Amino acid sequence: MAKQKVIVGLSGGVDSSVAAWLLKEQGFEVIGLFMKNWEDDDDDEYCSSRQDLIDAVSVADIIGIDIETVNFSAEYKDRVFKQFLAEYKAGRTPNPDVLCNSEIKFRAFLDHAIELGADTIATGHYAQVREIDGRFELLKAEDGTKDQSYFLYRLNQEQLARTRFPLGQLYKRDVRGLAREIGLPNSEKKDSTGICFIGERPFREFLSRYLPDRPGDIVTLDGKTVGKHSGLMFYTIGQRQGLGIGGEGEPWYVAGKDIESNRLSVVQGHDHPALLSDAAVAIDLSWISGALPHTHWVYGAKTRYRQKDAPCEVDSVTNERCEIRFAEPQWAVTPGQSVVVYESRVCLGGGIIERAVPVQ
Image 1 (cartoon, rainbow, N blue to C red):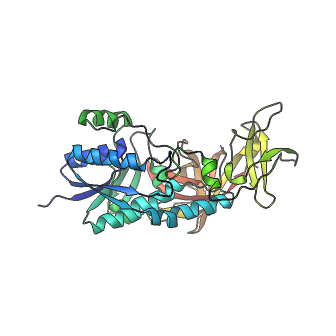
Image 2: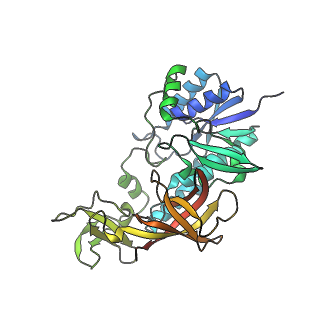
Image 3: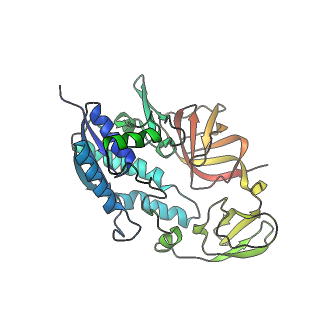
């Protein structure tokens, strides 16, 4: 009987490397695939893709698997980066990693892998897939501190049916321990941080290459000017650092953006009511099962990664939008970010936050 062929997205990091090794140990025919998704500034000091490829090739050699490379830069620009810029231009704060997963890693990559004869694909994400009666569920990882289901909520049944997450039941410390035992050269490599195509480079400098700066006033809720901003796209709800506002009293926080007047509104104090929301209206919805969630059912929701699940109800749900009503007010609910709904360990899906509903 022929072995099942699994193509693993090898990024050069420790997680995908150990995922590939585990699959080979389990008896699969494993091939590594290194994806190049960005090439505008390959010679830039902040771009690590060249070193990542070297690491991925070294890992493949040690594990004893073949590795191929594929360039998805054109697809990435068209499906992810274009929307990223449009969201910032509109004053919202997008999460491109969510779109990168649904459009590149689990669509363009999956399509390419199937063309290469793969039965399934695998990545180093910390999440789990479970099949029940022919339907596929996305579960949180065992390691709650590393769980990445928040970034995967837009995956559908077809994608989950062909996806493996070998690290889903492991803890990060054990993954690093395995990498050391195997003798992988990237066992102590630092985890990548920040937005995939920006990397470690200064965010403002990067964004200014693509969108014009539009300086304007920083105002209080009663309209008093207290400073100047360098462009609304550089700020997000709840931001404290980089406002350049002095004076007495508690620290200042970003509470809102007015695109038409180009004004940034701020408040003093972390717990100011203007930073709290009773609900979030979400659009561009994606439900993993394909069915709408129950209304007036107690779920948990995250409005940002690493946040604890906030008890909530899903209300006024249609195919286009819904309202996520929280049991307790949530802090700095940000338009453009994703709100992801869970039932215990099962990720049901979610959508993009259109607006926050202020505390009444």
